[in-house]
Amino acid sequence: MGDRIVVTGGTGTIGRHVVPLLVDAGREVRVLTRHGGPSSPGVEHVHGDTLCGVGLDDAFTGADTVLHLAGGPRGDDVAMQHVVTAARRAGVRHLVLVSVTGADRVPVGYFRAKARSEEILAGSGVPWTVLRVAQLHEFVLPLVRALRRLPVLPVIRGLRVEPVDVHDAAARLAELTLADPAGRVRDLAGPQVHDLGSLLGATGVSRRISLRVPFPGPVGRAYRAGANLSADPERGTGTFAQFWSR
Image: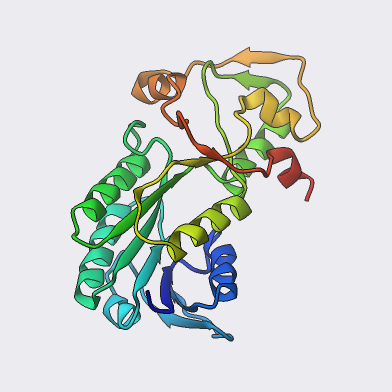
């Protein structure tokens, strides 16, 4: 493969950790962002928007590999269609997508859009790799901060998470991006599965008083069944307690 890699969302939570790894591996990296930014040795920033389909043809020209990290609360499937269309036109030989654990099992719009994105990529004709990743520690952090402020701990039966460190996610995505297309690979999750109590305990706080809170409906059933957890993931090494202590 050639040396140039395009990273959509390269300035985001995962992207800003992945891009230096790719540069260290000797690759030229073109970062597609909505706001652009200053370029640096080995890194070129270009303006584009995957959701609107703007700037993709120019960004993908001359690239063999695209790592698609850009995403949001809605419209990821629309963005994916724009990305694969531009990738086909540019002759991209490897398209890597970060998705979410349980994409096809949790009945929430964000998860459904990720599942649809996977389907679009698989049917695109572009050689591909998909890595489903559990929630990052950064995304669990607001919940934990809210729990620490409460006088009682809400207990939601069956609600568990397996948050993963962003450095573990970045390292795995860089590895996959630098390798040949592999289809859907094993999910990546954190080293520990937490309920709300153990998440709070990871910050050094315990609550003796708890209150059972119902989690009704199809979303509650999905979480109680562990639909948001991976059955056989690769596990990172960074714990939530370590993240909290940084």
